[in-house]
Length: 538
Image 1 (cartoon, rainbow, N blue to C red):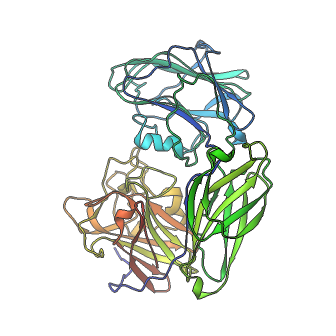
Image 2 (cartoon, helix red, strand yellow):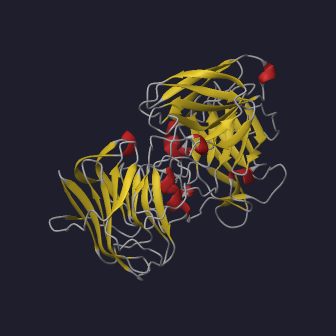
Image 3 (cartoon, rainbow, N blue to C red):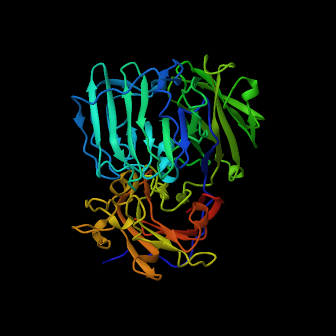
């Protein structure tokens, strides 16, 4: 197969601009959960756990109002082990908290979770209340954990759906855990006015940890486990947010251009505000000032930008003069929005956005995340962001030329991930590839010049590996070719890396080479930005 020539000499990397979001906005995240230790589940006694909309975007929590509803006349939902059902109709439009949305169908995960936006979560959240399952609970779309643990409805028991205009309920009836050590019966009830009730009649001695609660998802920070038994009456308060500022990866701050910041999760009453700016960071909790859960992240010693907003989203364009003296300059930013009712001061505050100005519009090659296995199908661990005005023909990831030298390599046939990097474009079950957000399609990844997938069927991987290191599938170099990787597009994927640390920052030193359709190339080593991020601007 033909490969585009990639030069061996390293080009001088340009100074890339970046936008890095840190911290957590407020009002409080729309999440409330309890994590139970092995054998420590204590919610069977005391009746149902009822979540009633409080009018502020959150829930009022009470105990014992609703009982267990019968399954007679319901529909059996067939689930395998570690499975997610097809969309199941509720019979009415069920509203999410804070006006996040409405749904008339849910998906049922075999491990005791309910997904409110069908087709958006591709994991059954095996196998306990931690790790990738818990990250999915916080990061993915809205969901409920009724008894989130390692369950196996394939081996015994029944999952039921009862639905109609007055309400709908999902029942796990005598479903065992995957190790066969417990039998569990529990139910979640949905009502058209937004109420939700969780009921457990039998929960055995679970061999794994368990998760119960609600999450609005979208990348929430962990607020910590909440003791439902010790707090039978609790008001979540306002949960419109958290107010968030951000920018997509392909939007790079560069001299001589304007950089646009997106503002999301604006409370309904929030129509005016300011973008605070400064030269340095701080982290001051504002709970004592009537803003619980909020923090001041910026020393606002520069002029603020006024915000005129139309909830729930907005934006602000910041002009960056064409001045070489600004290259490398970092502007710290944070949004503050006046929103009556969100707290005592009626002010919502965002996370922090650090804008570092670059000297030109580069290609960004980035490794970012806690673990290269990742398993987050919404966001690839490896990214190539084409912010130039050129089209990319080929990209090489090369540990063999790492600076300094190391013993790291790509484990291309790792089977411990939720998907398989060597699956490529395979349609075989359990062999889905790891190109995220359809980026292989968007960028025109050329499967025709890539290796055959070992997953069966007429499938290709989308890459060619070389510089083998140890066993089959262990390579130090990966080559990708494209037919339409145009300006503004992002190519992203997950691939396990062994021989060193697992996080993004541990990938520092790997050399990336980008070849454009005009025959020019740029190369450079990734540089560690923080423990979870390494990148280079080319």
